[in-house]
Image (tube, rainbow, N blue to C red; front, side, top):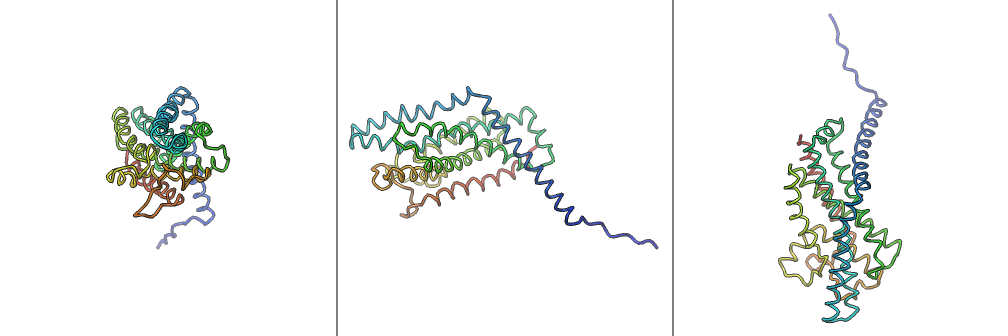
Amino acid sequence: MTSTAPPRTAAPSEQDAERSGRLAREWRAGSMVWRRELLHFLRDRTRVAVSLLPPFLFLYVLGIGLSRLLADGAGGARTAEDYLVFLFPGVLVMAAQAPAISVGASIVWDRQTGFMREMLAAPVFRGTLLLGKCLGGATVATAQSAVVLLTAGLVGVPYDPVLFAVLLAEIAIAALSLTVLAAGVAVAIKRVQTFNTVLSVLITPLVFLSGMMFPISAMPGWMVALTVVNPLTYAVDAMRHAVLGRLGQEHSSVIFSPVEWAGWEVPPPVEIAVVLGFSVLALVAISRRFARTG
């Protein structure tokens, strides 16, 4: 009569070593994808320069023109200065738009060239690869918005290190939400041409319906409803709170009107939590879809 030995179970130390090794593989894979996005950004200086033109033109051509129009209508020079300060946070978000779209386009392009298939063959979770791409895109978008932020003094925003740190953190969260949205569209669409069209149609209204150009109080009811459900609205509004709070104009500006829920003014920490929550939930949902793609 033979007896079968019970299956050998790994000792706790072996399990810890295996878990540490798996986490190390995930970290290396995600960081490599993150570095790849940064290298694309650093090597393609022409694309960076061209993508910075729209926010600069929007702020210093269209913005100045509209501010002069407001000054001629009512309020004088103070209203013109207020409008440029009001417009500045929205332009920071706008500057993150192009890098976010490029991350989604790279996913579609990598799928067409076959490079995505090689990435998916790696012994790591596919969600790790997607997270690395989104974080890389958010880092690039934040860096590009930081270039626009350096011109803050031209619109009357002071060069305050604390203010800049707060704005950069808020820009990073907004950039992550844009990048996750672009990645979601890229996971569902397989042609670069279709992706560019769909994402432009999707992101452009989101940016313009974030309250970047005019206060929510000046919008009709149907537009207010769209603005309130737009996550970018809360990022722009939180940045306005930071800027106007530093200038001492948070409650005196004739242009600024905060986001409200049924008459309750939404505080900036809640607004940032809304944007971050949207990014995390969307990333989880997209990761599940990405894990089923081949």
